[in-house]
Length: 531
Image (spheres, rainbow, N blue to C red):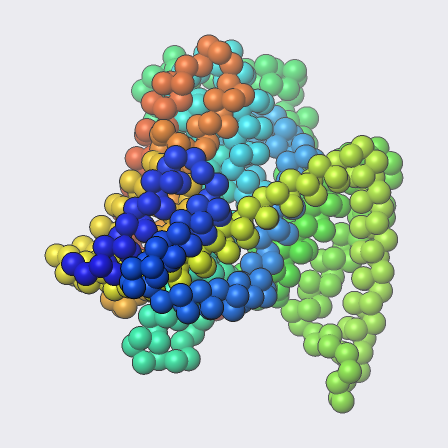
């Protein structure tokens, strides 16, 4: 093994060990890479001219329109979490499913799926459901392992059910890897892998995973009724009347469902790009926050919400660009309507922001959004430096040769990479694995004629386990922080084991039936990258 190869492997190992030690991800990726670059240059094993490409790479990342969706989706999620959407959903769904075995657990799964499609923030979802539902489940006799496992697993659905920040970041990485692989195969104009493809492709697997969770909870409740007893409706609503329950459920569902349809529907229908839909979602979340926080009339906000939907529809069917030589009369009418609608949006948005700002919520949401977005983009910059140095040390060639020689061909290589990611998920966060492993392994897998959309979704489902696997599963930490002292840490760890198993079963199903990830994108877009 040459000196280049040794340094490349040492770089990868040092980065992983340093991340496991708890050092900040962005500084670890950038700092360790620079140290290896300088050390390699000193012994003649690295050409420092490689570092000259860093600025170009960072500029390319910062001008990537897809990644602009990250802070917008974060703002949407944090704002909805502050708007108490989860509280209303949990109360309404808990009352609706009281007659079913394991009804509270089923309600937690459904609320987790709805929050995943509207907020997508694991920490906020797990903490909120832990504070609201865990005490009730424990007081009503639920087994602590089943209750904590259901809450942690449901809270991580935001990583697989679109719109998801994970899918936005992963989509960008898979797209870059696919282009690299296609260039090596002599195709210099490949079809791009869009975030919309991943959003459409993960919808069916995400819903299937929710179904697996619910089926498991019902099975546990039937086999051991004492561990998941029926809860009287009066214990949740204070009333046995079904009328108020239905009305409360509809009221709780309307806002998040409308927002989900507006954001996700506009992406899947091709009306808006993920970035445009994320912007609409952020505005919609601000509208919802203005309605929930203030008791004043919601007329301006309702009008603005209708105007926002009108603009989304117009952009999908009418060319609204100005300054063109020829504009038809229908397009002129559309432009006028869009201008009027924009005035309505500005009126409602201004009203909502003033109300949100009055109690300090806007400042808190903005600060949290800035922190999370800065972390993500800091990691992106560090990852670019790591990728350059790793390639300069020929580390990608070493990995390529190793994976190429594995038995079993593409299937064996895919299994090995999935296994490595799963094991790394015990110690590293999904975003660390995304920026460290995916740029190295994905181009090699894509050279083996694997579909990039299917590969991206397989990686996303695999990385979801990183939130649940001890000792560093973040969902476990979040729930431990809000769980009562009577719930032992070992109960939380034992509770997630069946749900991790269900995620692995889902991974096996997708491996056996790739069409589950490709059918919906093909139905919507006609074709996907790799066809």
